[in-house]
Image (cartoon, rainbow, N blue to C red; front, side, top):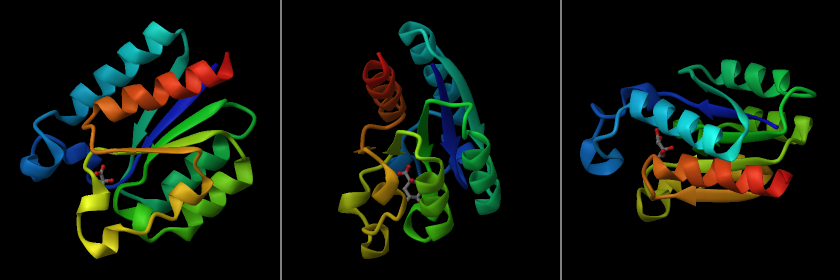
Length: 143
Ligand code: DQA
């Protein structure tokens, strides 16, 4: 099984950006946890980050026929991007949405998630551990 982990804008700034909201773990900690969880579950993993919406669309499209699961934190594009929603729907790969913070308890503009409309599950407010939970969910489902 191959899982693609996608991260949107500013996720590379973890550890620096608003630690009161996103915690003290940095992006390297996130990648380490993702790889460790993949190893534990016996799945192949690719973990990517970009600040560009179109790049996320490209990576989702490229996963077609190559990946069996997608874990995605579209970051701010969660709340704006119909293009990411359409890409997830187009490839039809089982996807889990992850948010480090609990967006349900934040500003009104964060209450809409387009990506969630194409995801089986949303995990939020669990810090970087949410990624581990998402990988385990997809790996167990695939078995
Ligand atoms: C986020 C929540 C988004 O609202 C925000 O724009 C982010 C990160 C999260 O992981 O909590 O950049 O997706």
